[in-house]
Length: 292
Image 1 (cartoon, one colour):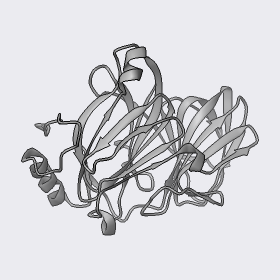
Image 2: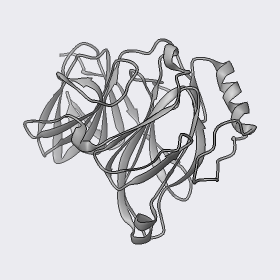
Image 3: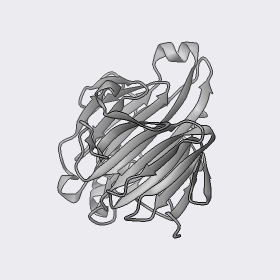
Image 4: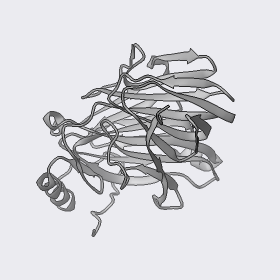
């Protein structure tokens, strides 16, 4: 029997500042993208004490969409289009950067005052070449509007795209699927083979795929064209199932910029350095362009 796992990637520690640590999973030296997913950060689960939290000052993006999803906690988003939106567990924030947007992500004052528990995943989705310069936009989809269903001991929520005969209302620009799955101890789940590129990320607990055990921080890129079965460990598991069609060529990443063109990234660098991006109303701070 062939191995259902084509490649295994382990997330690596990365500090966003102020002691807010994440596991950076994509991009990896082993694999740059899975479908349109070009970046994956996983934070938590962590107990944030009073006074702590996320303080990501305004910063720019081009050529991608950011997708924020939480299991626990909260993030307050502001952007240069004027949107100000809190995200809660089960909701999805989809921000299309396209030709250029700036945004901030911070912890709300009340959560900072009391302390809170935080756990979530942020991904970037590369836009097809035909949409890289699309107008920036922001969309918040409440948990109640996303398709949810049960398969045995597994609860699934479709965050973006199409999967298993269901389609989420969330905006997207190319074939994609992004599913949050919560498995009870010993629950079995089969990952549909309908998309060309697929991966399973373990956000909590553990699972076995074939004869291989995966723990928190592991991303299993699955072999194409076959259903892949997995079984949760004794403590259950929280998983992200993700992928879609292969992108229309490689992408360059520099800081927060993604593009099929190195020249376009150089322009974005100059635009941010010279203050040509729109400002974020209500959040006058900003992250300077890195030196390297």
